[in-house]
Amino acid sequence: MLIFSLACNNSNNNTAAENQKLDSSASAESKIVNDSITLPMPDTTKSVSKRSTVIGWKENKMPMAPQGFQVSKFAENLQHPRWIYIAGNGDVFVSQADKDKSPNNILLFRDANNDGVPESQTVFLKNMNMPFGMLILGNKFYVANTDALLVYDYTPGAASITSAGKKIASYPGGPRHWTRNIIASKNGDKIYIGVGSSSNIGENGMDKEVNRACIIEVNRDGSGEKIYASGLRNPVGMDWAPGTNQLWTAVNERDELGDDVPPDYLTAVKEGGFYGWPYAYFGQHEDPRLKGQKPDLVQKTIKPDVILGPHTASLGLTFYTQNNFPEHYRGGAFIGQHGSWNRSKFSGYKVVFVPFSGGKPSGKPEDFLTGFIANEEKSEVYGRPVGVAVLNDGSLLVADDGGRIIWRVHYTGK
Image (cartoon, rainbow, N blue to C red):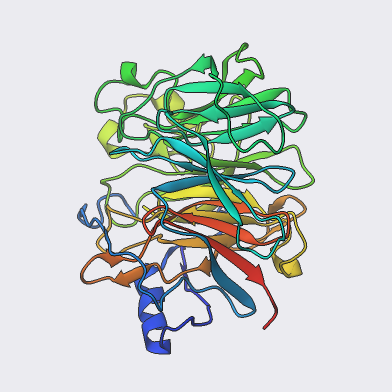
């Protein structure tokens, strides 16, 4: 059976009673996948639309992390900070984008003295088209716009890029899932692009879903395009498990099957693998709205590895490869959950951690950064976490696009 996972955090200017309220209202079902797990039946509960209103962070409020961790502001007063990329020299790149009134730029932050507060903030790239994923390979800077992969000449340490980029690959842009993340292969020869679906379950026709709900592989110059894995409704976060050659992704599943079905998930990505969308979910659970349409695809659907809870909008993903955090966190995965809209009780709106051992999940997801929900009854939240990245000093950065802040989580042991 599924079990509930509750937060275990210290308070930052929140009362214990308030913490308990926030944690219980934000908790969602989560468990390591195993053969005995049983999902609720679809439509067990009514499909509910409950959208959050972001009210921003009050002066004395901030997210809560476990005992021994300190939370601070790395940057604030931003405009839809979505994704974070850390260069080898410590430069921090943040893409700012949204489906409405998008800033369409990439910011560069530099913290030369490593005190957790950047001395400079500049516009590194501008006039983009809903930029999201970023990548540096040698003297090239790659950006995934919503509809194209661009590459720019790049000099490490440059404060900005003003030259025109070159479009090396095209793929479908919006609507619906517009974010496009990118990651390089371990040897740097390939680039993987996560492209989400344009619909919930293909209701606009599967001809509109060509090269969508998949991870696309291309060479560094954009050639050699192929579908690396498919049936992934919205694969956003991608990272390599430390010490392995295994790619992992965090996936947003479909809506309107009730409060608790289906779960979002974290999974290892198999080349050529099919993960069910839109015909099946969480392995060979056939979507009743598409019953009998593609039994062959239902049968070949791969069961994902880790349940992250229903409707959590699990977007951010990074493995922890530094040494600042305690041993428990080393090699594990941090996942930014943007938060639900299709659930009667909020799920997500937090950062969770999945422990790994030997490159494989070794425990259930744990709440790591919580307190984003301000008032469940009023559907108010302080912010919405998205991208996560690990700084060279071992601290964790969290992009809060609703709160317009980049949070820094550092371990002090106090």
